[in-house]
Image (cartoon, rainbow, N blue to C red; front, side, top):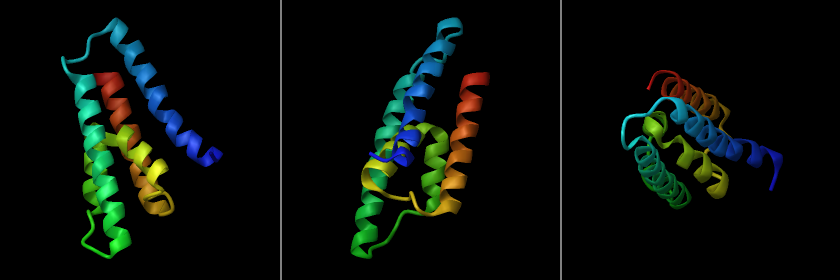
Length: 113
């Protein structure tokens, strides 16, 4: 596995660790971890569907929608999907927008929720 694949994947356990650390001194709203898990699984599936559509030349899911669902907590699943499926990893404008939404989500959740 390339370093370029390991670094994005490392963001998921780092965030999980920070989330658990933060939860140890101030409780998150009930169900927050389950919401992250459910939305992440959903977004992983959406990335897989979009990758399949791209290969077949069918209708695609908009990047805007991928970014919105990622910003709502599905970004860990998106990171895994991007690396395992090799989808949306080359388009730098998407990657910049994606990591901006990851940063905003992590800061909001870890600082204010």
